[in-house]
Length: 581
Image 1 (cartoon, rainbow, N blue to C red):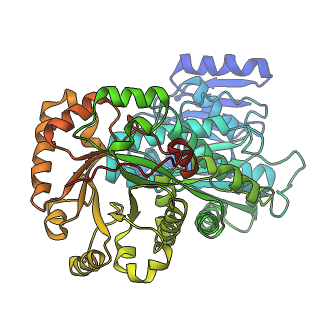
Image 2 (cartoon, rainbow, N blue to C red):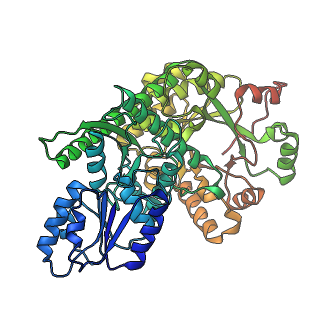
Image 3 (cartoon, rainbow, N blue to C red):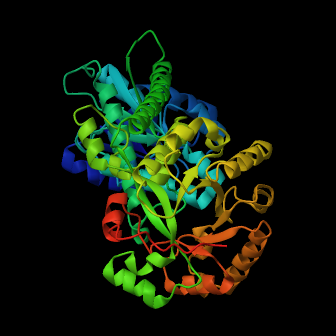
């Protein structure tokens, strides 16, 4: 029987009507009824729904009664004007500020008071943690198991990108949880999902036990479930990141999946120990396990990156052509596009930039049957690849592997070869010459992923490159670490304007003025100017008027393997390469 002691008569009647089809009797009483207290202690009561206060009973006495009652059976308290202090003191009950019948029944069912599959939780919200749920699961089953999902990394999104981006990431994560809830290999539909606090980033899944009384999960099964769940969540997040921009739930600024960890724990009921202490114990065990699982995730990501670096055939450089801009015409570009060939533009070819790619088929073949992978190869685009490598402390090694592969595969490509390089690798270029010594006409693009922290060393490197007839470029001028101070001190041979400055340049006169100012600033060091990311002829036309020397982008050429480029150019004769002043 469910006892309902409330002045909310409509709510009480709706609870009665919804329980009637399941054969569960309901006793409705008003808060002032002298039989109310006695009814709550009847031996056949399975759960109680009560108002936050009762006439003629002091608050202290009412709170003491609820505290003790909540340890014995599920209690839902209906109250809108209750202080946070009182809520904290009454941790053995579940508070509902603006109650509806479906919310009341959901709580009673979560605590096992209804005894049937009454899970009608609308999966558009996640309830906050109530100790009453695990308390009664523990008492009924003699054991309770938990999964703890920790996404504390979301807080960095709020700091770096603002509250709106943070909320959208949380909303996306909740939707992913709803989609996985009850699916094979994840937590089951009867399991209880809740959130540690209203604004927190830790979630608990209290696992419904099997029908055998007192049964616990077999050894190792919860660890496997936690691993499967984190893989499912991460891969679901990656899919959201890679969908078309018009369909994205996540904000555009999110290009990497935040770290997700899942822990687990089990505790047996012990009559000699306070049950709330046992619940705190299993939650802390789950959080410790989540921290250990996060370390395992990072270890596996490091192993993946090390394998990509060390195993031949997994990394494959592609090359994007760079052209001299002043004499290019729209007709030339349209002819090249129509013929899907570089030949109509070859007299304006300056060189190629190397861009790393992974070979998903080769990775799949290598890792087949090797167990769980925390990142699908298809998501390893260059920005993800380098972000992961920095997170697991192998960024320098990946950078070196890309240098070696880029030079090796470009031996027959004409013109200047532009190579991205991290400043710390450039500081030690003398030790890396064995990776690049076979290729003439090299230009190093100082990567924007880390700042140049020691200009004295960089200037010595600059002088050394001059002696070796190698050149230097600064990447993404106008974004990140590439600032005017760097241009003035380093005096690079080439300055690359960031793609964000080029997009829709022909439609924005303010942006044109800004780019013109950057070009004048870069000319202080007598640098050549390259605009990257050009996708429309109208953009290129504006850049011509502004005096830009070089261009690259999808309008002219999409990155291809060296083999395809060589077949396109046919090796008929050395290309006529126009020099740049």
